[in-house]
Image 1 (tube, rainbow, N blue to C red):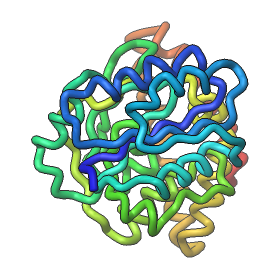
Image 2: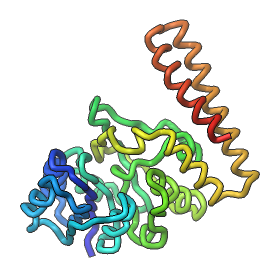
Image 3: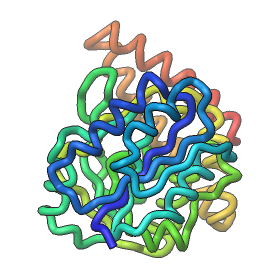
Length: 268
């Protein structure tokens, strides 16, 4: 059994797949396996993957039922103690990521490090000390998280969701089952901000509502909605501050707030 299983999911990513795979195969830490699940690409992605055959523990190029179906498929072929998903377009921060994570001790069920935005090359810092609060205001980046394989086998991603199956997984394991979580001060991955969950916000919020109804009793769902409204109110107060100190900043937040109001009204 390897220490890490690195799983890459892709479909028609000819312009990105090489950068992603290079960031993995040049790691200084070698006790890992690389698994690639390609959804039957027709743009040359498959041919590039074939060039990395010597590095691959398992790979396929065949139609699948979506990203979470592909991720689940990858997990079934994994043997590592911990699994990380570095999908096409994302890449490990540097060649010592796996080595540094291993040296950190790895004592919890989920280990998360920093994620870097590829468009601005800045950290997406988790600013919430409480994990429950963080999950409902934000999410945990699977690109920068190492998860015990046994959890992913016990709780495969729910494939009926297109965007939030990983969010549901975190709720099931870290909140409901109280599995252990730790954050390490290491840059782990660079994240492609063009992913579906960042470009289809309304769908993401609708699916989150479905997950809440599925996992929590009605009275708790109401409390969650109350929290979300309070969180949005805090943004409004921030917008007032910006209006007094930065007109440009205010205009940006105002546009974001209008979008959020539409989402909240839809949920209600």
